[in-house]
Image 1 (cartoon, rainbow, N blue to C red):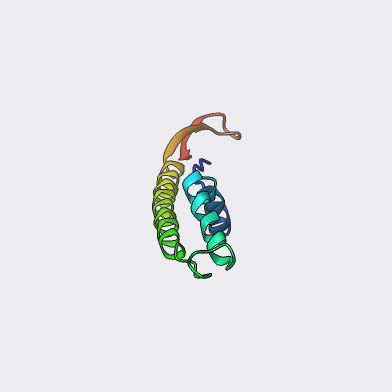
Image 2: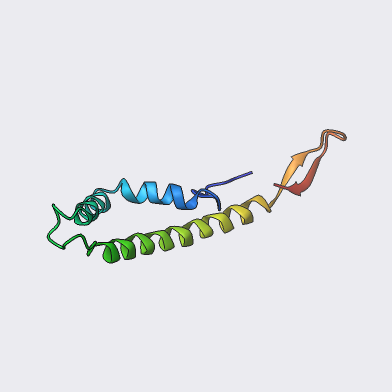
Length: 99
C-alpha cells in the first residue's frame, strides 16, 4: 500500500501549525504578536494588530496544504487500486489481482 500523504484528519491542525511556525517569517510575526499583547512593551496599547494578517496567511497556507494533501491522497488511492500480476500462493501461477 502506497501512502504519500503528509497529514491525517486527526493530526492536521497540530502538524500544520508546527510546520507553519518553523518558517522564519511566521515565527517572527508570532513573536511580534506576543509582544503586542504585552501592554508595557506594546505601542498598540495591548491590541494585537498583527493577529488578522498573520491568521490570514496561516489560513491560506493551511488551505493550500489541505488541497495538496487531498490530491496526494487521491493519487495514492488510484495507485493502490491498480491491477498487477501476482503469484498465487496456492496455485503458483500468476494472477491479475489488485495492488
